[in-house]
Image (tube, rainbow, N blue to C red; front, top):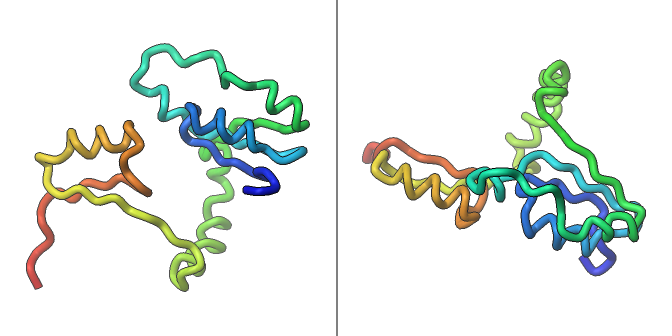
Length: 128
């Protein structure tokens, strides 16, 4: 982002957030939706290590809970389903196969090794 980050959607809350704050564009926004970097570490840390970067860029940080928008779910589905169907909206999946790989899949999720949505397929797909 040569001109800085305008909007950063954060599910991690760890070092990635610190890096994003350093690159925040003037009046940039940070949306906080999770803290996977801290799920297994015990008490959640008090906040980003470089909160002043937010101040220096006149930035804004705000929490986001999907449940607050449940009444608008039908509207979102109506708008987004066509985008998913025609390829404008894409998702990445990291699929591990077999129940025996569940611990590894969970480890990949919390280590950040996975790319996209971490999924576990219960067994090999049937041969065609």
